[in-house]
Image 1 (cartoon, rainbow, N blue to C red):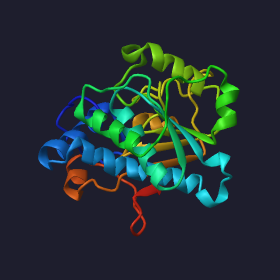
Image 2 (cartoon, helix red, strand yellow; image 1 turned 90 degrees about the horizontal axis):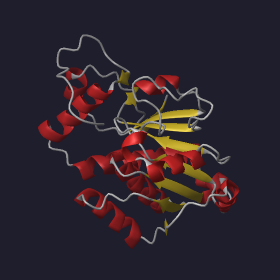
Image 3 (cartoon, rainbow, N blue to C red; image 1 turned 30 degrees about the vertical axis):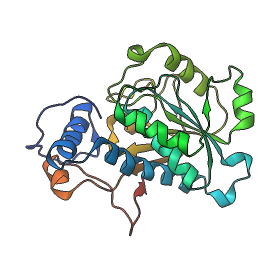
Image 4 (cartoon, one colour; image 1 turned 180 degrees about the vertical axis):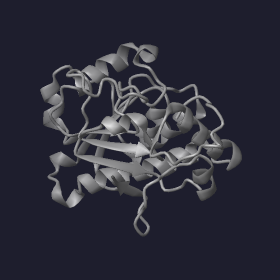
Length: 251
């Protein structure tokens, strides 16, 4: 979700895929009208994101090595997404390690989430090995929480560019949170680029962004069963139906 967009109250038809402006309108409703806090939203969405990971990679079916998860966090909102997901994966008895090369310690949200992970003894890597095979040998899967909607690679540069270059070469399964990093959230450009990120699993946060229409991996989930019905109606959102008490749904 990103900067504010137009008022969508008069939207005539329901949307399954959201533009950046529509995602911003949803976020604005939740933060301003419903008074959700940013940390509260991160907690709701990313607990559900971690649950989605457990559905594709159930603990009972994994070897000890396969339970190790590399969570790669970027400097903006998706970094917060990754930090919360890593913490919940640890609670679920996976073994996450975080690589967070551009820490956003200027905000209370990122400081608090980083502290929580550190206090829970989740390791933080000081660098990402350049030898991709080393990562493949140590970890069972990777989680991409580098760039979210509205964040351009050119805006963050340096470390994130190198991180994405490494993620593209991994042979272990890759899970992208909200959108695959490097994709245009509107058009999905980079989706068919041979050098683009091609995740096995996409976990859309709250609702699918437009680029998800070009996702061709094995599993696509929507995570975060918390959007009030009147917000859904006001913004004409066609959200998937959840089963019983589930907080994620497979599309």
